[in-house]
Image (cartoon, rainbow, N blue to C red):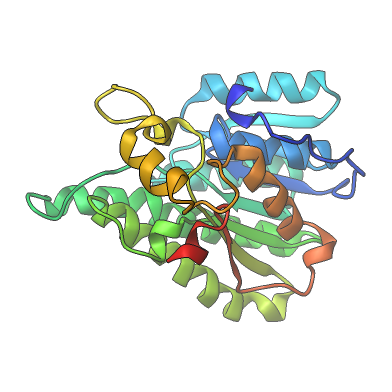
Length: 273
């Protein structure tokens, strides 16, 4: 997968997630595909869920060919009925789901001037409420798992700091962060950890300019601000595998005593503000 090419290959899988079922939403491309791939390599049975069936099925074909256990699922995280149907299907097939990774989201670049409230609510419904909707629907299945009960939410540094022309997106990702912390408080007694990752500038389809003129990482403003002046301390935009490793950590037993945390995975850009 071109979007998931890593600068350094991840370590050989130790199959430490064997026997666990893991749902990854937004698994068809980008960060979701990289996370699904890593969890599959680590032995989890991966349910690669996406609103777009074709890339999810292609990913599952790659995973199964490589010897991993995976299946594709179609879901619209903005729909109560669609999410409920997926949860019911997983219950019928597996009886439990130890790991839920909420990655699905849509890009939105909307300035406050001229922003319609209906549009704002549509973005919130997917990017914020989608993570909550999936977590609620799958909570009984997570509780049914015997070990390794995890919820991992993919937020964004935009949910922590300000940026231009992203009111709905920033608000939704900020909500995901607050949801993560509050859910961790509620679910700790059940042995369920809830954590979030806040990626920085990652090389995915979301980094393509809306007008189709190119890639934000190639623009003069990005090169000047983030590369020339060293705002990204590691000297490059991230790639999906850079997020997959931390996501695996949160899903693994190494993170059994970590909950309610938000990990910024941004090449150090947040340290320069």
